[in-house]
Amino acid sequence: MTRHFIFPKHALLLAAMATVVTACNGLFENIYYNQADDVKDFGFVAVDASTKSGTVYVDATSYQRWNYIDFHSLTTDTANIVMDEAGPSQWDIAIHRYDAKTNDAKVFRTEYASLSDVAALVDMPESTGVTDEWTTDVITVDMSHMMDGWLVYADSYYNRELSTWLDVDKSEMPPIYTMSDKVYIVQFGDGTKAALKLRNYMNDVGIKGFMTVDYVYPLDY
Image (cartoon, rainbow, N blue to C red):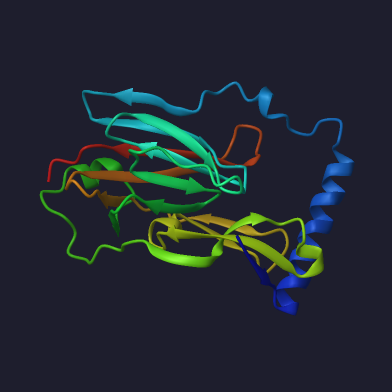
């Protein structure tokens, strides 16, 4: 784990965020969300073999967990970052909050908003796929010291392109969340490809961090 100090402007912004969160927790403490109240299953909640499509529902509320998704076997798994748990031996992409990484894949952001349009293509987009990069100041695992001006990050790979599926603008409070509304093609190490689109980043009661990802796998080109 790596501790990074926050520049004064960012520290003040995060302090304001903490104040807002604390106030909200106190105001709504009797109705505050309990994960057990979410009746949805997680993982591959819908699979249509006839169209090679489906939906993955991910609980990405924790800053201390990677959520692993394997489109090859239609399975999901998790690993605790702080406890240095090992992830599964086979996986395709992983999600931490809204951050994403891949298992030796390339990511292409398309100009399409429809999975069916991307699935109907006869060839890959003419662009350079983005591979993962090693980071030391992206994957936040501990925000408890932000009032003191520093955060704790995990050293990790990170795919900057796939992570653009949701922009979180913290320049004002509350933050502004904007989905790209684009379909992303992920070309895995074995050459197979998936089309992914983030459909939602909150659950039915508006709690952020619950991600609904629609997909087509495998693509035929």
